[in-house]
Length: 272
Image 1 (cartoon, one colour):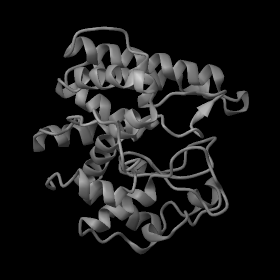
Image 2 (cartoon, rainbow, N blue to C red):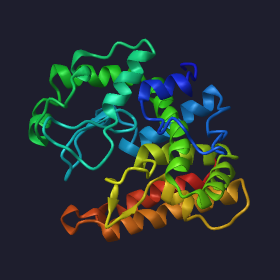
Image 3 (cartoon, helix red, strand yellow):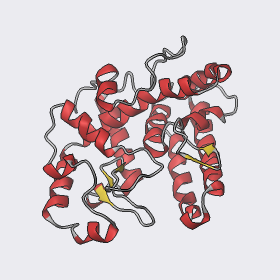
Image 4 (cartoon, helix red, strand yellow):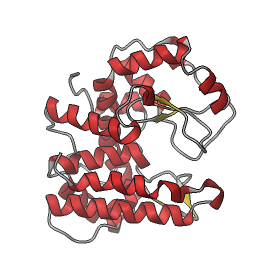
């Protein structure tokens, strides 16, 4: 398992830590500060299972109804040239992070845009040399992908606090700390940022309403820390995802994902 080389180095590699000046009280103790190698491995395995059933083929996927491939255990988004989606493009961030940690991605991974224009082109090359090499590299770098996902989660809280109204920041941080006080709560915070983002991007909304970490923390009911907080985080995430589905463009057919999304959130309330 790679050492957890995060915080400032990870922030620089990701270029995603938000504004340089944060609220004066935004000095959080981020989730994953004290994870053991075994806990990190368990979190990586659960995320891989969540995204693609833990399969090797699932490390390179193009989901139906989407305009882009999703790669790695976290299904990092990679846009083809000419497509500008509403969701954060995380694959180039991961490749930059991997290189900063001394990894050597295959040549195809370092292209600026996904080299397949559509799902048909991607599927026609699925067993070809480029995608096969990419899967082989991804299998070998699961710990590095897990570290990257953790780094994104740790960079998310300062961004959430900076984006929130000043009157909400204390409650948001308190809710985060309550959830982070258990291993499965830490997993929940890590997985949800990878799954649905931090909620600070205006593009990641439907009808002006978002569904990221900012919104999940903000909609939590008042509960004690520990397992009650992890369970409430799971419940709040399900509420926010249901709101997303209800506000989504009908043509996207997002209701088909409700059961799977809710099942994923249910794992947050169970021991790691």
